[in-house]
Length: 100
Image (cartoon, rainbow, N blue to C red; front, side, top):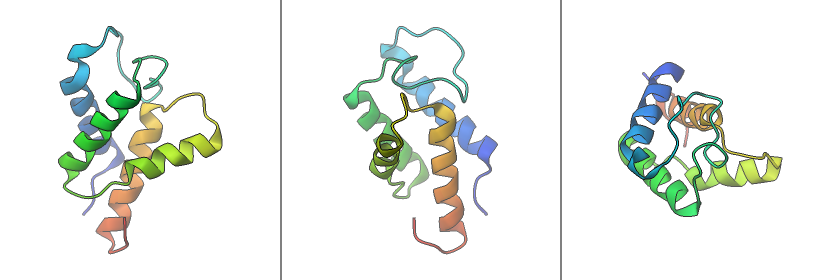
């Protein structure tokens, strides 16, 4: 059984909380929070978050694929909700025997 969207959201928020010591952001982090605009992430923080996500799930979540996809869509930011949706979809595929 794969994780629900809400479980993935909780996991991602927990990981972000662990990484938050270096931020100046003090607002609530929600699905609409932008990693770049709100949290001020730069490339190194994105890599650290990607590694943390992969370590947490013990699976190869293709984080670089998500970044590439967002770049192709020309979105102004990476929103927490988009990240959670991407992870959730890949966990669902893995749960039903598909490749991640």
